[in-house]
Length: 387
Image (cartoon, rainbow, N blue to C red; front, side):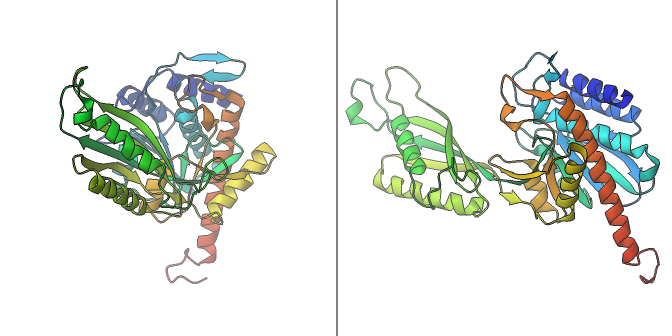
C-alpha cells in the first residue's frame, strides 16, 4: 500500500508540471531529482533527455517514454479514481509506471545482479522525435526495449503506421480581386492539388474504417494564403499529414504524390508548385513471435487475470524510429486509453496505472530470467564456451 501511495503521488506531481514540446526543462529537473531519490544513477543529456540507470548485470532493458505533451493546459483534478490532466495518458502515465516499476524491482533481492534497467525520458516526441533520435546518434545499447505509450493495461501495441509531413507551396501571378477571371488563384489551385492527392488511385483503395492499419490516409491539416482583401491570392501553402501502412515505404508513397503534382503542373503551366517533405517516419511492426511479446503477454495475464490483446495503431510512435535503427526485441505498452490523447477529457484510471506497474515488473523479471538461463545453457559462464 505504501508503494502504491508513492506511485500515485509521483504521477500526480508529474502531471502538475505543464511540459509542452520544447519546454521540458522543469519536468526534466523534477524527474532527475526524484529518480535520484529512488536510487537511480541519473543525468540530463545535451538536449534535455533524462537518463536513469538502476540494477547491474545482464541483460540491459531499455524503458523509454516521453515527458513532453501537446500544447493545451488542462487543470489537474482527481475524481472517482481517475486523474485528469494534460499528459495523463500521453504519456506521463506510462512513463511514471516505468520509473516506479524499475525502482521497485531494483530493490528486490530476486533481481539483484540479474539485469540493468535503463530509463530514457525523452523530449519532443510530440513534435520532432528529437529525443529518441539523439539517443540513437549517441549509440544507446540495449538487449530489449519497451516504449511507454497508452495501449491499455490489457493490450500490447505491436505496430504503428509511418508518417510523411508534406508541405506544398503554390505561386501564381496576381491582380485585382475585381477581375478574378484574369488570374490564377493560388488558394484555389492549392486546393485543386489537394483534391487530386486525396482522390488519387495510385494505391489499392482500402476503407480506413474497415482496415485502418492497412489503409493509406491523407489529411489536410493546414492551408494559408492571400495578403489582402482586394488582391487575388498569389501564394498559398498547405500542410498534409500522410499515414503510411506497413506494406509501403514513405519513399514509395511520396513518389506517387510527386507524380500527381508533376501531372498537375504540366496541365497548369501558370502555377508554380513546390513540394517539400518536412519529416518522415517509416511504418514499423514488431516480430509478434519474439520472447518479449510472449513474456509481456504472460505478465498481463498473470497480473490482470485476462489474456493480452495485440493491437496495431494508425498513429506513429518513437518505436518506429528505434525499431528501424536497432535490431532488438521491442514493443510498446502502457496504461491509458489512447482515444483520450490530446483531448480535453484526458485522464488515467489510477487502478489501471498501478496494475501496469506490476505488469512492467513481472515482464522485466521474466526477461532477466530468460536471458540469464539462455546464457547458462549456451555455456557463457565459461571462457571456452562449453559446459
